[in-house]
Image: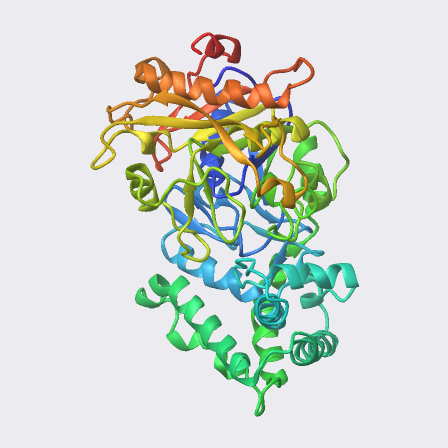
Length: 515
């Protein structure tokens, strides 16, 4: 059992680096701990998706999810909530939920989509592809590596006040149709006249979307839940380039949304009642600190807020104490076109091993792998204030195959060409991209630790590696003052299964004695 109690009924499950840290697997661990300490099977009333949309892939108990919160694997959770800070395609709820129901998970009877959750539609996905094309073909810039799920254009509609809410599915179809058609026409004009997409590229967009969803839903097709035609985006094309079959799109989206209308409600009231009843709410965040639209590495960021304060905006409840978990891996990964200062050489034997494990849940894209960057994580701690840190995938660093010995590296600072040392992450990308990492070297270990369940049974080098990573994070976070409340290392993940976790970790003060 972890050392400390959760300080609040609100628990935020966030990422401390660049996403893909294993946040989804924490939901089961947190709920299990809450049950054990409270003696109540129903203590976790709500697991809420806080931000993003179907771009934030996560895995819980070997169940791969995009839009639904990872609470689906725990049947004692009463409500699977979708907060007002989320943008969601109604078809994605069905594509994800129906196959899970067939496997025995209770989904729709527990689903609560906030009335102010925003619609993400086909126009947003086309705009996503068009703006990526604009960056490359018109501006001659590097691609952002967008998921193509339409997330940024969906949030753009929120800022422009053109959003369609899920409560619109509880009204008249004619009202919904007028709003959606106007949005789609604007999207077509933007794609043609502003993004300057060619007719050939316009046609390719429908191939891209069709192929992406066929890949993502291959298992559901194989299981007979859906026919391939369900994912054919070509049916939405108009007779000419930059035209859409508006009536077809309205009918398809209204049909999907109408099926979900009974699950649309007020997350605010349900959340407040849960708190009054002494129960807990877990906020499940997509992405991570350095992908936050305001504080991350723009323009290679997501379009939502990825840090704990968004919990209150998305749930629509008063600001109050919240217990914040900051999740990372024992090494780093990034996807897209990010500056990756600690990226390993692809030929390094550890990189070869790790890349076999690292593919995006949402897109299937190969992730880049790198050494543990304690500077990024230390700044995230300094400005986000995590109560606990979680380190996943420690088992992946064990010597195996061609990775049969060698030092593990931890980035503790950056250095400029003139020798200046940076113990913080520069906010200027122009500066950051010319820095080089300063590494500490630590010995590795040969033991398979995937079956270890007690910290004391870890190899000494694994203990010291974890302790050094934590110390390096703390050194950056408290570089010019003493941290008053040191975060605990709450869990260490040694495999993907819920059982593959170490909880009996010494206090931070004790861990630091190992370094």
